Structures are given as structure tokens and as C-alpha cells.
Image (tube, rainbow, N blue to C red; front, side, top):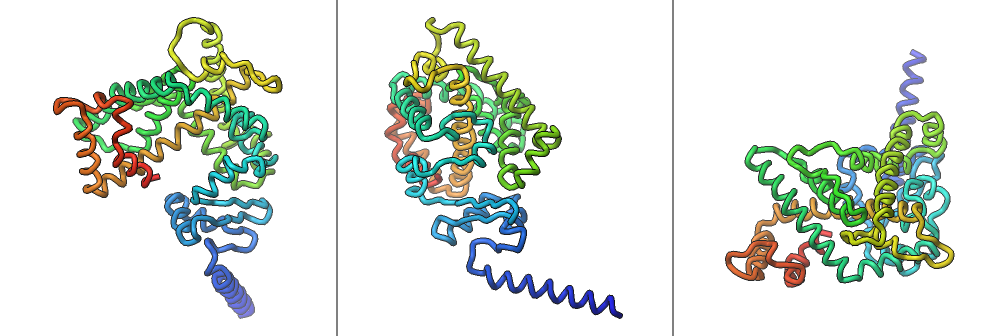
Length: 361
């Protein structure tokens, strides 16, 4: 009987705590629990994480602060306000130092644009902008993407259609953009996107490294540091994947060094090798490795996620799809033309398509 009463008391206390914290947090983005912080809500919605965060952003005018478990001292600002993003990442970048914790978690990025201090960030940004604005670079990107779409994406989709295959569109776009960004940055096509959907070591390494970094943000520092020291679990894989990526990156840098100064296809690595630095920063192999891995990160998931959402939205809005197709047909040079006949300049005339992409973003 005594044990039964103790159980009733504990159950009553538990119910009281749940109701108390529910009432305390009913006007907050996520329930903030004792010890665990807001982590339970995030973990419960891990399978639809982006939709969950998006719904919370909508409820909170585009910005809210996530607070993790007490021992982690974790606070993350989520924002979908373009003005906030521009303020933090560009206008007043110097006010937002990365901090030691960020630099430790994202160590794989080296001293690239996403992890460097203000001086290195500014130099990286200026240098890359000067290359991006070159007309031959724009032409190179157009030709690279057009070739990949024609020789790989359309071929794969036709194959999948004929075979009646169910495909993961985001995986397809991941492969497409990884091939593209490797070709643009490294001058090397890993051929991730083909009818067989092969497992490519460098692409797999990149994906698993990103996953490990994601979990580092929510684990207590001592835990992932211990795993790294013991070389176990996710951290063991992270170290292996970092090694595989470095082998690929330094291998491509070495091969470009051998043909430096000779006639070769344009790519960012080769363009960087022609730069001399600013006196404080030298364009050595480490600089190029760090720049390359940051650009691979920037150009892979961002574009593939955008494309996935865009085509999902188009598929669920047939009127928009019809308007986009109508605009493309109107801008083709002839009734017999196809999408390749539009050319780089012709794409600028697709105003409705541009608007649809912006709205999807």
C-alpha cells in the first residue's frame, strides 16, 4: 500500500510538472523542458525537421532562438528573414565572430570562407567575386551544367521512366549538383549521376561528414570529443571521410599544379593558382583545399534542396507548370527548337520562371 501511495505521489508530481511547463511554454516556439531544454521537440520531429522548423518560423515572424540541454549551453538562432541573413553574412559580418565552438565543430572547413576570421573572409569573398564576375566563368558554368543535364539527368530520367522506377528526386539532384560543383571547382566529374546510381566514395564521404557535423551541434562537446579521441562511432567515420575528401582534393590540386600555365579547361582551382595573395595570405595548397571544400558545401545541398522543393511545388501547382512551359516555348528560337537552343542569354528572358524560383526559395 505504501509503495502504491508513493507511486501515486510521483505520478501526480510528474503530471504537475508536465502541465506546469506546458502552461509556461504555450506561447513559446517549442516547449523548454528542465535539463533537456527544447531538444525533445526537435528530436520528436526529426523525420520532418525542415517542415517543423518552417512552421515554427511562421508562428514567430521568421526568427526564434532554440535552447538546447542545460549542460550543452547550446543556443541557435533560426531565421528566415532575408534582411537578417544579409546583415549577419554580409553587411555586418565583422560583428559576428564564429567563436571557438563553431570552429571546432566545423573543423573540416579549414580556413575557408565559412569558418575564417573577418580578414580572411573579406579576402576570400573579394577574390571569389572577382572570378565569378568574369565572362568566361559564366560561360563555363552554363556549358558545364547544360552538358551534365543533357548527358546525365535527362538520360537517367528517361531510363527511370521506361523502367517504371520510383526515384528519390532529392538524391538525384544531390548527385547532379555534386557532379556539377566538382566540375566547376575542381575540373573533375565524379560521375555520381548515371543510370546505375553508383556509390561514389567522395560523394558518400561528403554526405556522411555533413551528418556528423549536424549531430556535433546537439551533442555535449565532451561526448563527441571523447568519441573522436577513442576513434569510435560517428567520429570514427568522420575522420575516415575527412581523409577521403582530402585525398581527392589534394590529388586534384596536385594534378592542376602539373599543368599550370598550359592550355586547359577553365575551373576555379586553376583560376586560383594564377592569384598571388595579398601579402598576408598566400595561395598555397592548403588555401585552395579550404576554398574548394567550402565551395563544394555551398554549391551542393543548397542547389539540390532548392531544385527538389521547386519541382515539388510545380508538380502540386499545374497552373504554374503550364505558365512556365508556355514562357519557355515562347522564347525558343523556332518551333523546332529545344531547351538548349535558348542559350545563356535566352535564359534571362524567362522572367516567370525566375519569379517561380524566387518564390520557391
